[in-house]
Amino acid sequence: MLPQPVIIGQVMMGESMESWEFRTSPRARRLSARVHLDGRVEIVLPRGASRESVDSFVGRHRSWIEARVAERLAHAPAPFPPRDIELHALGQRWYLHLAGGRGAPRAEIAAPGLVSLRGTGERARLAAALRDWLKAHCREPMQARLAELAGQHGFAFGKLQLRCQRTRWGSCSRRGVISLNICGAFQPPPVLDYLMLHELAHTRHMNHSAAYWHAVEAVCPGWRTLDRELSRGWRHVPSWVFS
Image (cartoon, rainbow, N blue to C red; front, side, top):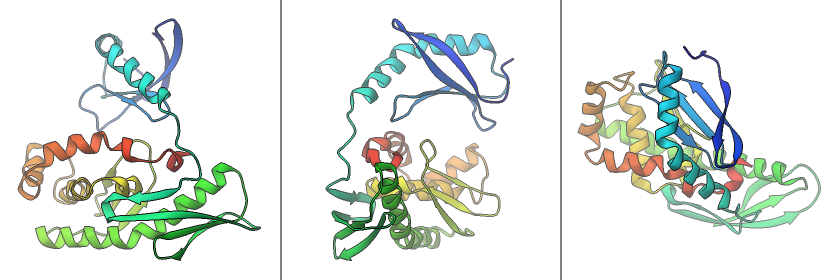
């Protein structure tokens, strides 16, 4: 049996050796592969997965994984700082002004549709300042939309948390605390709505049972298409978000 903690396995990719991350998840029902924006490969295992089943899975999907890795690595990061920040889900576009000055980097609204990035620092610190602004700016409209959808469909939730994560779009705790990835703001509005409804449905069913998906279907009949769009939604996320 494979160990429960994260393990790093060496697998052959063409003529080179690359480190793939193998992670056991108590929520996983089947083996799955994720290729991150930076080309990292993560194989998610259900509990009890055997070495043979993992080897078989990797063998069947290696070509697809290699193609995705090549695609990720060939995609050059967008220039930084960006010229603008388009928040599709909120129907907003913000142009970025580099104001310079002294002190720690900080971003703030200077005028309608204009964000000013002040201070000095390396790219990572400037990107962190933009992320901080993004979280603060998106909290109110995303909170309002979540509450609106909850009211329309009779859901009740505790509070909203906004996070910036590379792999998870959202979650819901047993206390009704809903966490949403701030990257949802870069998605088309129907996709963000689906993400919110997906997590709101977990306030009634803390699983992915048939009853849960029936609840999702009742409030979002087109969820299958939107779920596929959400799984590909990382392509809408600017590279600086994960700098």
